Length: 248
Image 1 (cartoon, one colour):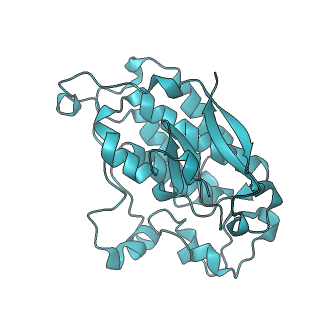
Image 2 (cartoon, rainbow, N blue to C red):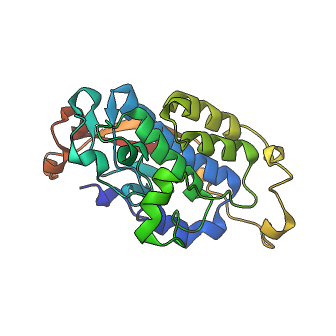
């Protein structure tokens, strides 16, 4: 349905192919792209419920939230819905497994967003080197989380760690995440904490900048009638795709 707009694949593929070219300002902008899309959904009282790096598409360096098949309005979600435990469990709110009648909400999306914010700093998907047989248990019941990547700004680390906190009450809302990322995007290179900005993480050659994404804004794009929208569920408003395009 949206592949026509995703000329650079999904986020997982994009990181694998382009990670060495990304500067920190590019990574912060990528985090902002996802956050702005999620902010739009949450403003309509809709939660995505299945955020992960293969559901984030990349078109001309801009990130798009895709695969809205599990998305629902908050008023439509039941505590006994099997969809509460559906998805890629590296990104699923641990409360879904710890509480029998847990109902996903906006803070569940925030947890998934936190994992994505970490993934943007890494060349690898989360927990790629952990045994999958026990991974769900360790994440949900032993509070297993990924370690910060060397060279990551401390404020960015603190943000995603707060997002993936085990207690949903301590997780920030999407507006707070957006505000912190805006502040980071407006900071100079000096916001890198010396503790994490080591010589081992520096690259010998200048990195390529994705300057074309710096002035992106959030717009809604109406899907043409000839596209198949049957998988968008009952949400009429999801007949509109969240798309980030350059502010020409």
